[in-house]
Image (cartoon, rainbow, N blue to C red):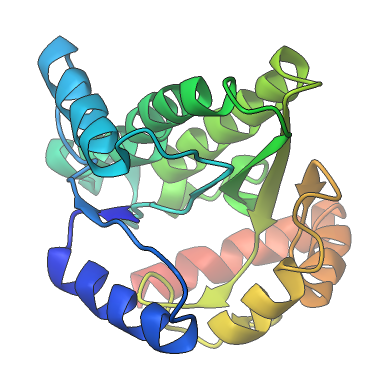
Length: 225
């Protein structure tokens, strides 16, 4: 498990070991929100190699994400860079490092990613976030063609889930537990999934231009309020 928050990592490790005492868990406190150059990339690679010490990686779940709402001209340069660093650069570099582990395995591996409806629908209050999720979608689609025999890929194109990032009870919102439970039945079986029945229905509705217009209007009003 890799995250910038060591305290949360340790809490998650403790909880997982209570549920699955036979597990062996490695935690790496590394902030994906940083400027990426040869030095920082090598640092991340070395941290992973040191912690794993030759062990295999069969599954990677890229779930880190940053979202800042607001019109583009009101979004600070710091927040813009943060969304690109975590959602695009961190995701890409971490995936490249882990794929080198997966290529050495005899059995097939699995990489799971967190996409978003925002990658296809353009909301004025989340322009940069939506653009990063468009990248994630294109990135995963390309990876499925690069490694068809070695790695399976599943991109979860997520709708509204009640989390720290989204605390509002909007229509078709899943609780995090409900969403995770439904997702687990689908990952690895399909390349692109909505993750839950609610989100699948919402995605169908949002294919209608009128529903898209209403959704954008609600989103703009919500973010103004």
